[in-house]
Image (cartoon, rainbow, N blue to C red):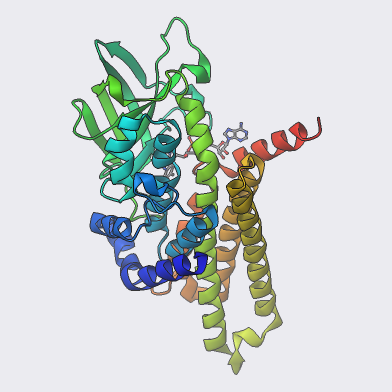
Length: 378
Ligand SMILES: Cc1cc2nc3c(=O)[nH]c(=O)nc-3n(C[C@H](O)[C@H](O)[C@H](O)COP(=O)(O)OP(=O)(O)OC[C@H]3O[C@@H](n4cnc5c(N)ncnc54)[C@H](O)[C@@H]3O)c2cc1C
């Protein structure tokens, strides 16, 4: 089954993503039809059980598919990762039957695209300091504030928004945050600035401005005050997805480097004959293989029901730093041609950097890992 999924993802990526990815990057535009096509093929419901119209696959199958998509285009992969890991997992694990029927099922079929809105201009790594405020108004909630960096936020149909439900005179920290299911048709919903990014240019990253956004009471996810915990639990999954994305980018850079080193001649021979180049290729391959081994080990542990908080952070840390290392070395192997847009490694280098930043920076991953290492000693 895992091999079948991998082949399906590779065929889709080769036929419907890779030929267009450079153009999408140049245009800073992602065709939403491609997301819906991914949905038809099952890529947007991979971890959702069949009873909710998903494929009900194991985590390894999902990560193999995600890596194959990222190998063709990191922007397409981040849509897939966010959708599968964050809003759909929050609905699956904490949503009511009615919410699952109304939102999760069409999301699993890929008819509705999901997004996740935790970050704010003043609340990044310290996400629990978020300020977006929700207040009750009859049966509804009114949300006021700004969410930043929302991946797919300009076209998403369902956005999981974290907002404060505690009052300003009795702040409850992370326990004062709740999760809301927000749709763009709600009164007071505004898409704000679209970020002009270094990489991942096809993926729209936007601000969302809420000015008394009216959210029906039925769209509160789970229990009031639990939204931050739900978000953190989902980010445990998300980090595995970002690790797979990073590996897809890194593998693409290694493959391009292997081909180029065999073709490019200097001093009368292909540059792959120089030991300096061979050592780079060997280090690139070794780091990718070790990061991938850790990722698949962690995926298997997750499917056995084990906690993967520490290993998930290790996966994201290792894979993202591998992607940055490998794409940097790839540009070096390409020489001047690596620095221009005519060759693929320039885009891969730009796309790799974000994997060290979102869903927890490398510094935050190290904090989590160190904390978990100490927790295991007692
Ligand atoms: C392209 C893109 C897409 C994104 N998509 C989403 C999305 O869909 N939804 C969403 O909610 N968010 C999203 N984000 C936000 C992302 O998760 C944040 O950018 C990230 O969490 C870091 O927050 P920050 O940018 O505010 O940096 P800061 O938190 O301000 O960090 C700045 C620097 O300080 C370091 N630092 C911070 N705290 C500590 C500490 N305690 N110890 C050591 N170092 C520390 C950081 O590691 C970093 O190097 C996205 C961001 C980008 C760029």
